[in-house]
Length: 101
Image (tube, rainbow, N blue to C red):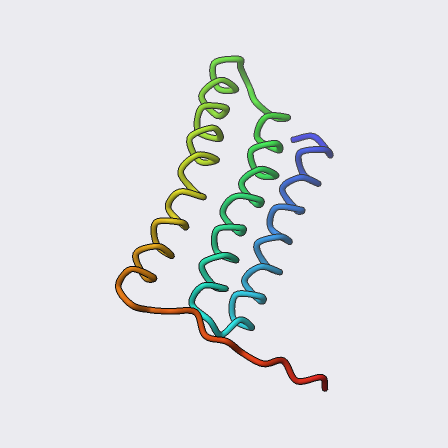
């Protein structure tokens, strides 16, 4: 494994770690849907970039590229579908006032 792919894997895992902390700090459903979609999409980009760097063959690279394209299409769509179904079923966003403390 090259140094570049190791760095990209570490960046991917750091993004996941920070996003999980943010996920538990947010208390609204829609905020959690947003951050979970970002965990999937952004960390997958770095993870797949690391996979591309250490790909053993061109066939493997093309298969991994297909997985990346499918994930980039389906991750935002599934997050949108989840949030839309919650909104349609009557779960409305709450207006939270921020305290300046």
